[in-house]
Length: 149
Image (cartoon, rainbow, N blue to C red; front, top):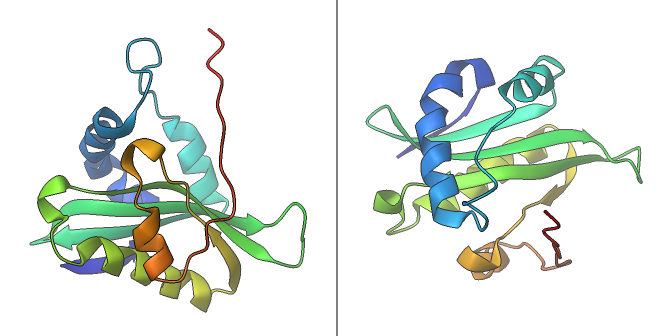
């Protein structure tokens, strides 16, 4: 398995089927909240230098990604925070340590550029928090959601 920091422009087309697979696996309200990524917003963030895409490839095929937004914190302006947007590894690649190695690779790359904190969201439906904890992450917050329409 090969890991890389790739530009959004280079992965934009091939990431789409994986995002669809990811959505089908973890989405809660699939009947009335359909997947509609705002590709223009992703492009703008990439152009502004805020979007990071770390990839996992096997035989040059994209099999996973760790995508985050890096920017100065709104509360601690002297610190760069990386907020994970999406993290996925194809089911066929989840045996072994590929997921851990992808996350560690992203952490190393983000650390090199001076990021102070990395935040990763974990769905209760697919809780990989224990994996994050084993590699040094701390459980700091829960997110509560109310579907109103």
